[in-house]
Image (cartoon, rainbow, N blue to C red):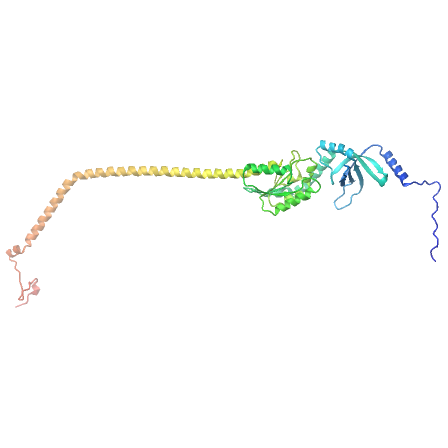
Length: 406
């Protein structure tokens, strides 16, 4: 046989080397870290895998940010107990920063702690630097804006003209939010026939960017004149949803103008910059839409008034011209009648003379006719030697050619 039948036991450790139980080693490691880090320290990183327990504790990993598609270079677990969580939330609230969430760059204050029951090194969070969060958000937002501007993304949606009468409106927001109610109430106040196609979407939390993108793309398939993307305010940290790159690019792809009303009075989100037009609040978006339609109605009414006024002026001008023409015609008629009366009066005095001349002329003509008739009288002609010659058969001979010789 190649192998021995019995395996030799390992040799005993040397008498000078220490041996520890797991509990002993845990206590030693815990004490060592306490000696290395006797006070709380500040640690910077990115939140990942955040969860909240029913007891109010928060657990997450603080990771070293890495380029997309590559694993993080380092990570450490963080626990935020419920009692300390209230302190941290107060610090965040004072700077108007929202809840902690995955992907958020943070600078936390914590105690380095080795937890023997799980054999895990962790940070026990005791505080946070809200200004660091805001600065990181601003830097990330500015970098994204610069990149989108360089690619021409920020100008795409602005190239679409706003319809003259945008009455069919797409609305993307939370259906149960005050933003939706304020928007619809403001539109109703104008009294126009607005038709609103609303898509319910999350506007806060890790799932919000995807929900907003889905809502926008759903409306791209509808026949809408304009899309309103609104939210009723909130902490600056919560509004980071609208700094999402995918959301910004989806807005730029819209086939119709997109108006935003994110509800923040200070900062402009990336969505605001990429959108066609941005307003401070959902009510302001609805008000602007109402005024666009009201402006068109006013222009139409002014045009109708101008047409009526122009038609009235043309009618008045025509009536004036017709009256003047009638007056000129009447005056011309009166002048013609007066002239005719003068001519008649002038000719009336000539009538007796003309009648006398006509009578004398007629009498003279009759005298001539009478003389001719008398000269042609057969009795006169016979008295002058004229005779009526007849042929042998008794016919009157009228020409010498009718007389036969012999």
